[in-house]
Image 1 (cartoon, rainbow, N blue to C red):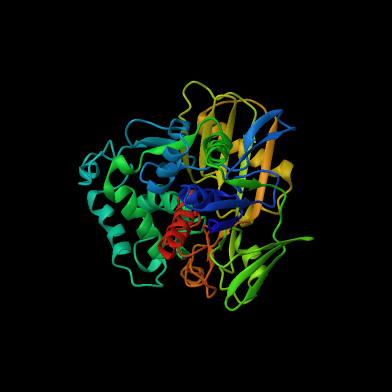
Image 2 (cartoon, one colour; image 1 turned 90 degrees about the vertical axis):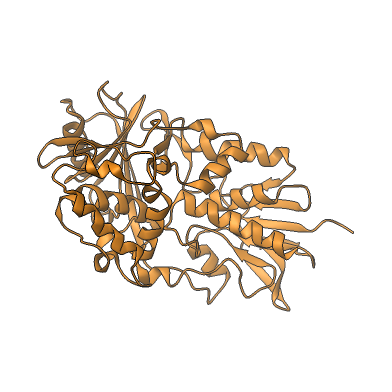
Length: 416
């Protein structure tokens, strides 16, 4: 009797994670990807305007992202993430030019808030108790109903922290998602919230070593293979359509649909998916950072929010950036560079640059959208869903995407 086969549609992080979990030799695994490369939104590419390899977006990871770290261990790429030995976050407020370093202590008892030099300037110990309202918020509540959304602590810590995690204005973000992030990172202490970045690029950290590992395990990987149709019979998928090619799905086989929400909805009419999305703008400047520039810098009261210093470039991420999407690229580059120059205290003309706009980068992390996210198991016995837009309990992040792939793979194993 032939081995059962799992068809994974999509080689983004969700699909790669599912494939890794299932490539143990007990079943055949086939990975089908519409694009010519793996990684989805988490990838690097050669940019001809800058004549260098850059990431399509900047991603800040935290040491508490357990699924991400498990994924990297599996593919032998843990060393691709770099960060400080202890949690520390450098900030600058462009309105006042104040600069500080937030330094949570390693353990879960947050004694660091008792030390003025370790906490946010202008804050009191009592201010930090306000975030506890998130942990008690009822289902469906927005953040603004669960905690204070004003004052120095909110502007200088909670707003940038949750904005980066949710890609949604924190005031309207889902309290449940913010609480989950808080529980898994800062609430566990500094050991769970060390900032980590893929210093050699996202592809080198995630896609390239994952594909190497999957190939070594015998996984069939096919690129430029777009799924155009799913055929159903007796409440299960019985065939996959790839243009003119039709692949039968045998009785013991299953399918994991690890594609963007819009693609999944087009293949599965009636599927509930998030309906509102938010933009992200990334900017890359071909200039070596000055020696005093921290690897990661949070920016308050500016157009930019996070500045990343790589050996050959400075890169910027702006979340919930719908307001900037329609600005001319040249105007946007100049506006962003003005903030960068002030933030790191350099005076030089605009260097070579690249702007990457993603209008529908992630779903809006509101309570309304959270209620629309589907579970892994569908109404069809052998069809599962994966992706950061599914009901992972996390916002649309690298951690959420990888965790969704693991959940789908574990569901296959349990049902075998």
